[in-house]
Image (cartoon, rainbow over all chains, first blue to last red; front, top):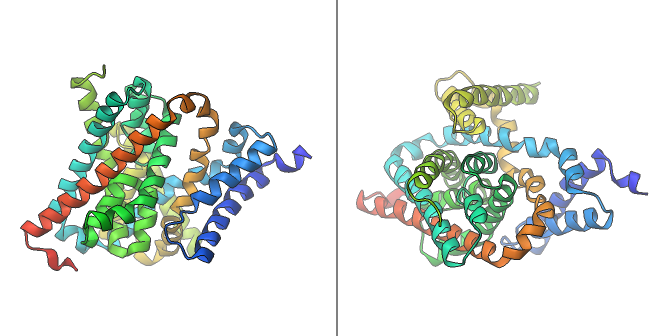
Length: 232
Length: 119
């Protein structure tokens, strides 16, 4: 029985199928806030747990999907090109808000982590959480955090941003499309961008650009910050 | 044919991005590749039409590509459950702080430079 499930095509179908199911449920329910992850993650967890399949096997089998994250980040260059005018006109604002975002991201993690008495290893692994996964894993290893914890935190952060982002945008009266794109992309990287693309072309492109800029700004800032402000 | 060409162009930019990134050090290859892709389109080295379909597919389904990494939570659960609420609280509050601060800075600058007419 287990051999029927524990093989690569089955594991790949599980990921793609759970994602499709998530999209389908959101479409049928008409709830734009119902992020596909609410469905996909429990479904995958349930299947892996009930069939007793270790994460390492699931991860290996889904290597190709994981890999596509790289090409999809490269493809954001195409969105940038399509919206080059908007970006050119807002260069100053985009740069300032990305710098603000990366500083707020790192400092808030350290401050909140210290306040809540979070383990140092957790704090180190959370500093780069607003950056896209491959970037965050690199940054985290370089400062001595746990890259897997960083990856999970990045996705959790992106998920939270994608779900709560549209609400926060309304609540805090962020109205300009460029500002919306920056808010989504700086806080929630690729998952925020996926949501921003649905808001509009400008939002999506600016959000995609903030993934790249946040990656660069945070990589630099985390190094500087840890050089001058040792935790604990 | 066109899709294969699109795939090749995007992979080629990723490869070039990885190469450059190994020279620069701290900026990952995919991010460098994104900048290179933008430049290639800007300079006319790559035609917009030849990557459109593949690029739209990839950027339109990014959510899917994050799924396998998140399932790593299965292996981390042991250390995560001890600090779970602290972890969630820090991630959530910090995410909202970044979201609001970056959005406001942009909106403030639009206001100062009088570019509210963006929409």
